Length: 120
Image 1 (cartoon, rainbow, N blue to C red):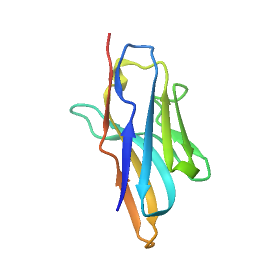
Image 2 (cartoon, helix red, strand yellow; image 1 turned 135 degrees about the vertical axis):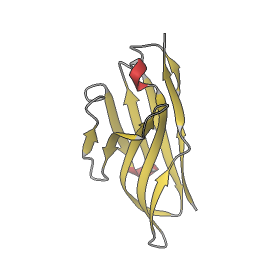
Image 3 (cartoon, rainbow, N blue to C red; image 1 turned 60 degrees about the vertical axis):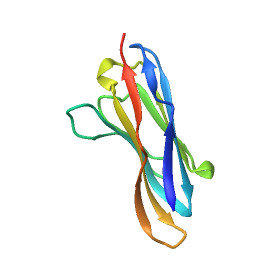
């Protein structure tokens, strides 16, 4: 069994920072793309940032120059450093990973979600 476990959400004031972490565990052979999505109340889930196992990255326009995605392949971990947070960043943040298990089965994994609230 493979799973993603997220941590690092919380309540912050506008302009402050948070760092999210997501660890993949279980019978994983390798992981291709890892990314972060978010879903605000009444809105659809949207891509925030994504990184390939080669290190390339892509960001939503709304978070460029404020958020940084990174990963540690040795630890099967992806991070999201969020700076200059705005109230519009308030959402549940979900980690996603596209992986290959040791049984050579491709899986699309989702974390349980972590709440990020930006409010004064």
